[in-house]
Amino acid sequence: MNYRRLGNSGLRVSELGLGTNAFGKRADRDTSIRIIDFAIDHGINFIDTANIYAGTESERIIGEALQGKRSKVVLATKGGLPRGSGPNESGSSRYHLQQELEDSLKRLQTDYVDLYQIHTFDPSTPLEETLRFLDDMVSSGKIRYIGASNYFAWELMKSLAISEAKGFPRYVATQVSYSLADRTPEQELAPLCIDQGVGIIPYFPLAGGILSGKYSLNVNAPQGSRVVTDPSFSRFLDEGRIKLGQEVSSIAESCGCTASVLSLAWLMSRQTVATVIVGATSTTQLEDNLNSVSVQITGDVIKQLDEISDTYRYGKPFAWYRLP
Image (cartoon, rainbow, N blue to C red; front, side, top):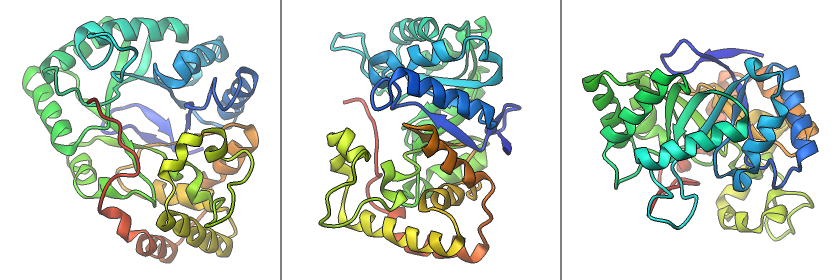
């Protein structure tokens, strides 16, 4: 396993990270624990979750799985998206985040999280309030590093400027949808992150499985695929991206690897990417994706992938989560 600095921080994270959105939902408890054990045994030290994944089950399962292994991982969670319909059950106010952080720590069975991420920008809360709260939590030892998620470039830059002016901790990372099927971060966010020393953590790096090449036009989705186990995912399928997945599969075949491995390796070649989080519903799936760390792709292949995905540098992101 290779390890990279998370932004300009001194924290080193595995190039391939483990995303846990499926834990407690598409992967049951026992399967999820086996996946976590497998990941740690193969050098993955970055585990990413959130307070809303599987209705808090993801955090609970991770907390159980990490007993006796907590020091082996860089544990990241998030807060800020809605947890209920009440007036203070969403957003990045001190009131909401304090409650959510405490609840996350209990479920994760730990005294601290290594990376706490604001799940999306909150237009109703002053950034200074959010950042001051994060500063307090870093000082208290409950949080070690802070990150953002689903921020526009200007929102991230404003946050960094406030931290600089007030002496607050700076965001060291930002999570965003980023893949061959969604290169929109390259327009503004990636150049900003290069300039400011912020690491990008792509989510949906395989566009929910589309870049594995498993989907075909006018053919039913394969059994066990995400669109079958999570029908709401069908909103992400479109003709252009399905064709892109098939093109990536063709290139991958000539490289002697799977389309998923090639897609992940392409992301790892991007200057701003710190760690690529991949979800898994089985150890077999994770085992294949681990090959992305060691596969060698030439500059010509990267150029070819750049060319076939160029259209996805423009338009709407593949996925984007914002408060109303």
